[in-house]
Image 1 (cartoon, rainbow, N blue to C red):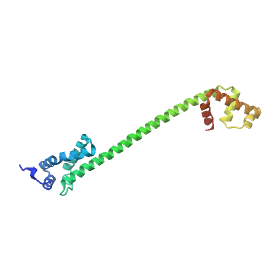
Image 2 (cartoon, rainbow, N blue to C red; image 1 turned 180 degrees about the vertical axis):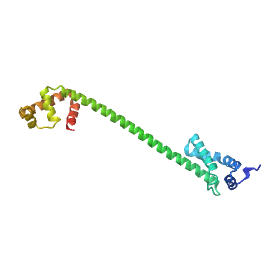
Image 3 (tube, rainbow, N blue to C red; image 1 turned 30 degrees about the vertical axis):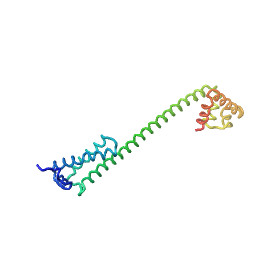
Length: 194
């Protein structure tokens, strides 16, 4: 059997192209440690470095008949390892962006859900307080704030004076403000305008 360790890179490349497994083994033995160190210097991770070497040598064997190595086998192998690592980094960046976007969406969704729950609870409290107003005061309030009718229109509907309507709305707002507190009262004013 021939001593493959004496062959040049160009000779090994030609033998590899013809399917010589011993030539492939010699190339692997000749470059695996150097390429592993090169990959480790780029990744600082032994597993990723080992994966890069395996991928490069696996591709070297499977594409041996079509790859264009030229006369610089070491340059080809170094470039292959570098490209593999660059692809790995690009995939990691895409994964990190994807994970970050999912986390941000999740946080926004939680905040939005929390906001909606609080808004719903606040609406319920306000609706309960409005429902507890005296019947006539509640009716005037709802016509004014929800139906957006003028005091004159409400007075005509209810058969009373504008002054009475104005007083009923004012009393309803005072009552609600005292029962709800300032923040809930402000929300009430916002809610009835939208």
